[in-house]
Length: 574
Ligand code: FES
Image 1: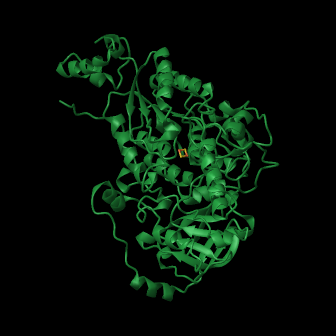
Image 2: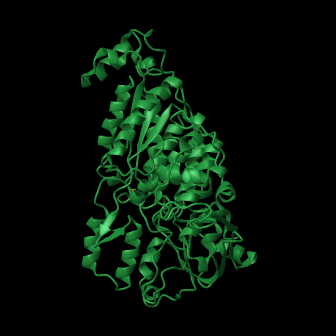
Image 3: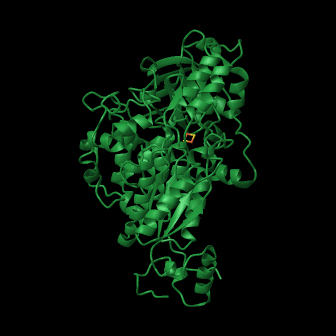
């Protein structure tokens, strides 16, 4: 091989050799028709693809990969696309979150074990973004993210309807007798009418925004609709850029600094982002050796105003957000509280990227002086019910419930909830606090998005649409309500949530950051003597997961995955 043509690269440990193993590595790759000079030391770019027909939000990723390849070739690189485990939020049981860490292991080992110099991460549906970011971070090669983009606005009978948010609204209308089953079914094909991910500011859009705010993508990555050809152009430009990043040896660790995570936390508040970002960012930071914690979220984000009038908190959808200027326009508005020197994937600082970012619609992207909502970041609650913390998203809650004292109506697990929620004899009124146990990382297992439990029909029929709800689960980023989530430690790990009983009084004080169970320590100790831990899975991945998953406030990563191992594999395969 002519190794003088290019500087030594990682991939040359496979392709740049004259021995038997060099033959093996090159010859088998050539069965796909590549000429010999593709392997002459030019940057080999792995395109990590989460395409799957079972992940409908990522169903167009083969097309995006082709545009990335164009860019890689144009810049003198050699692209090789590879699949990794894909997590479809709407299909996977018991919950896609159970497999986020498993997918991250697939990503990490696929990158490390292969002749790759730089990586393009194709991400879309909720868990595909954190799993790819986590896995790649543990390898720390030059890496760029390309999100799949949101779907076009849902359109139903002349009105815009948003992914998830519209489902929660309409299903409550059906349960309250205000919408027919036929109309509900018709809305299915109207809500999701193009390729892409959920077009509300749900978890997918939030995480795409986090990727951009962290500096891990080119500007505008978060909001360009999947169906807009500018999404393909961004993919092509990202393909060109990753080749340069390899030449510059610009690695993830130079971009994912503590300052970058602080920028992301503040951005999440400014966009009214999903509570799921809390868990995912803590987990990604953990892979980089950066200790991010719940207090960082409250300290940095709580007083940041929400500038976006987007569902689930507001009116508009991601397509409108892009036409209004997209994430760069939001970042420009919160410039004074960002670390502008943070380096981004295009080689420029965040400050340089957003210097001229225009806003074209002030009804969609508002200003800090006249925001959509003040003090909108995630609030972290603590107290005897959540010694290690719980979170609430005030921008999605009802203002009148943020200070509330109520009688607990307890559901021991999700089956108990489903069995009793629609029954006439459920002893509940709108002042009660609904408590759902055993939905945390170990309890479900996988920490399902069930925290925004539907209200009982008899409450809905009174025209009441929100009640205080508390659980150790998560909620969909597309959901809304006065919902306390991620209670830690979880019930299945013996947290105080496990000890709550029907009739206990609970006080929620969001301004005071407090969640308090009005039961004496002595009584709780007595109840603890009778508490029995749930039966956990005994084999397979679920056993590994339950044995090793950390609690929500630590990011719910597996304990042995925290940190990274770099990209070096000195031992050969033959
Ligand atoms: Fe895939 Fe919402 S279900 S992004």
